[in-house]
Image 1: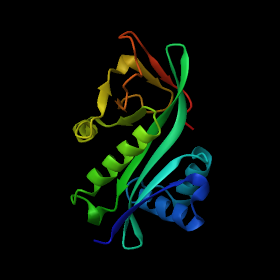
Image 2 (image 1 turned 180 degrees about the vertical axis):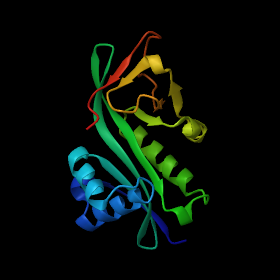
Image 3 (image 1 turned 135 degrees about the vertical axis):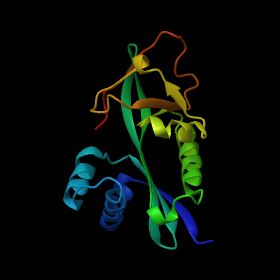
Image 4 (image 1 turned 180 degrees about the horizontal axis):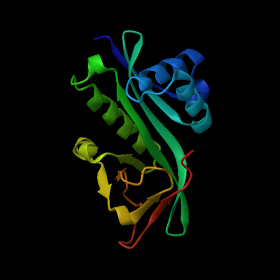
Length: 173
C-alpha cells in the first residue's frame, strides 16, 4: 500500500504542509483560503500535534490535537483538545478514519492526558466506536460558540475521582 501517517508539531510544519492542510479543511468548512490560514495562525500553538494521513505523497486525511488547559472543579489540568478530523471526499468509507482515530488515541495515551472533543449528535456513535465517552452537558463548560454540541472524553481514567465535578474548558485558542 502507498499509505502512511506522519505526526508533527506546528513548529515542524512547512508552509506547503500548512497550505495543504488548510485546503483539505476548506473542502468541508467552506471559507476562503485566507480565512483558513488566518484561523490557523491565530489559534494553533507551536506544540499542537498535526497528524497527516498520506496516499502516495498527498495529504488525504488530517487530525489536529491541541494541547490546552482546563479547570476541573478547582484544579487546573492540561488536556488534549481533539479539534479536527477530515478526509478527502474520494477516500471516505475506506476505513481510513478508523486508522486515524486509533493513531490519535495512541498518541493521547502516550501524552498521558485526557482528551475532549465537541461534536454534532450524529457523530457520537462514530466516536463511541473508539472508546470515547459522552459527558453530560451539565458536567462541562466549553467557552466557545459551540453551545448546542455534545462533549466527549477519551483516556479519562484518573481524570475524575468524584461523581460531583464540572470541567471548565477555557484555554481553547
